Length: 128
Image 1 (cartoon, rainbow, N blue to C red):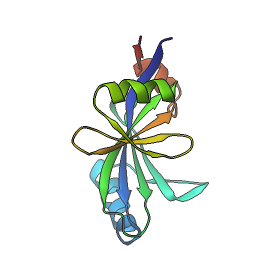
Image 2 (image 1 turned 90 degrees about the horizontal axis):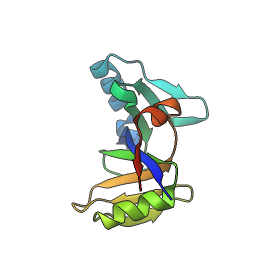
Image 3 (image 1 turned 120 degrees about the horizontal axis):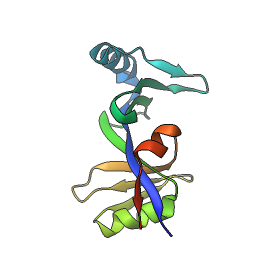
Image 4 (image 1 turned 45 degrees about the vertical axis):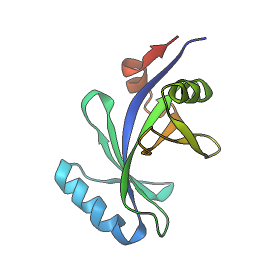
């Protein structure tokens, strides 16, 4: 059964000691105000850019190094994880409602459910 997915979100993972300064920097660098999430004080959005590509800032836990990671959103998470494993990804952590994987070079990325609504519908790729 076919499913759809797309590379959709760039996340700036910032530990507590870098979160405020990093959020302010990237808001200034992009010219976009960081919109805090009303339900999660550790999360802010810089909004949607070209083709619905989102940039988000999340506060990570103590001891996590600052890093970037991308989210692949999919309408069938298990099917997308299996497809990416066939390309060389490995499962890193089952996060409950989504998967954290590693690409062949060891870079972290996540496979998540659809989060961008109409942008997903416009830009997702259909896989057999």
